[in-house]
Amino acid sequence: MAEDLVLDTAIRDWVLIPLSVVMVLIGVLRHFVAKLMRSNQVPDAKIVKEGQVVVRARNLRASANFIPPKSFRARRLYFSNEENGLLYVPKGQAQNAQAQMFSDPNMAMDMMKKNLSMIIPQTLTFAWVNFFFSGFVAAKIPFPLTQRFRSMLQNGIDLSTVDVSYVSSRSWYFLNLFGLRGLFSLILGEENATDDTQRMMQMSGFGFDPTKSLGAEKDSLDIVQHDWALPKFEQRAEAVLRKALR
Amino acid sequence: MVSKTEETQLSNLENQVDNGGGGAWEFLCLVRKLKVRRSEKVLKHGLSILRDPKNRSSLGPDEWTLYEQVAIAAMDCQCLNVAKDCIKVLHKKFPESKRVGRLEALLLEANGSWEEAEKAYSSLLEDNPLDQAIHKRRVAMARAQGNMSAAIEFLNKYLETFMADHDAWRELAEIYVSLQMYKQAAFCYEELILSQPMVPQYHLAYADVLYTLGGLENLQTAKKYYASTIDLTGGKNTRALFGICLCSSAIGQLSKGRNKDDKESPELQSLAATALEREYKQIAPDKLSLLSTALKSLKVSA
Image (cartoon, rainbow over all chains, first blue to last red):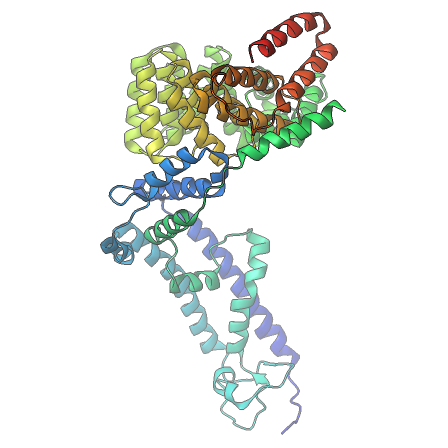
């Protein structure tokens, strides 16, 4: 049924624009509240040390060809020694990382705070949208959609004959939710507290897993073949000098 | 290490400010960003900004950063009264701050009251055991007092945690060289080469240490590193050129008895000698005769 519904311009004035404005304002508010509430993170000594060890091991791997073979071998042994090498992680400890993250009270509190600051405004705004702006058609999507989207996009509209392109304001809310991220990064600078989608992606995989990175470094260090580059330098120096003296 | 463009920018700004052209604030910001040590200039221009209340209020919240910068510069130039005034102002504004506490401990150190400074630093470290700057101040204090073994101990402990800090490795290498512990110094220089393999100074220093250690293998390695320095600096480093000549003659002396076939480049020494002569002819022609006799004596023994 391809009949064209004519939508009142008042809808645009009183629904679409206020909704966007309200979402922007709420985002800005959340950003500042998050800045105020951000607790001073005391870095854990062990984590700092592990980070630095990884950097050092990476340097060793990258520039291994610049130091004499004996020194390289000594350092490699220092890192991957079975008993007390820096990168060596016994198998039992490897599983504990995630459990440790949960039991560490500070980190748990931090994550809870971040989750709450994301969930509560979203829930409130969603409830507000549903309460005030439901039961009518808000906008028309410019491209045709299948019937599957009907339940998602046409929530308040109880007529099953209306074209799926006509959506309720709930879908406008979702559109804004994901779309305003670009606007926020313009106004508030990068790395602002409203970056929900990034946070949601982070929730699925835990960020910093030190034991795994150490194991990875150790494996790559074991693979490295030392090819001392210095003898070539002598010939290069000769060439340089010859050119300079010509 | 400051890059070339930044270096030129800095010197341009410096000239501009020195000749009364304004732009003092940009100069100070650039000095702060690059962490260069220009304490006299910073002191002079910083004070001129701070003394004028109109300039001061136009800075806004950066005023306090400027106070900190001027305080440190004043301590570096031994104008302790200026430093004390700046720190007093900062203390009034931020009474419980760790940064101000650090400045006060620095002032104690500049005054020479070592024990009080040590106590202040230890208490600051208790609050925040991972503060890199305070660890380094403790090492610097030990070194200033001449207590090298304590400095080495502190620095080693610091490096156990923060092993990717190449400034610390450099400091440790210098301390070892001053104490003639060349093997340890060689280890530190290797760390530096690993983290920044394209910086010729480290190759040069490593080669110097290896040459000082002596022994045929070390001399050969030293020659290779002098060669890499020449390669990295395009043949302009006089010290590396000298190093090549000395190493070659020393190697020749050591392996005179053995019939070692010289698979390494035999021409390097003569090339280096020629380059040296040309450079002396250009820069210090009156010393050329000294150079020629020295080189001849080296070649004779080889």
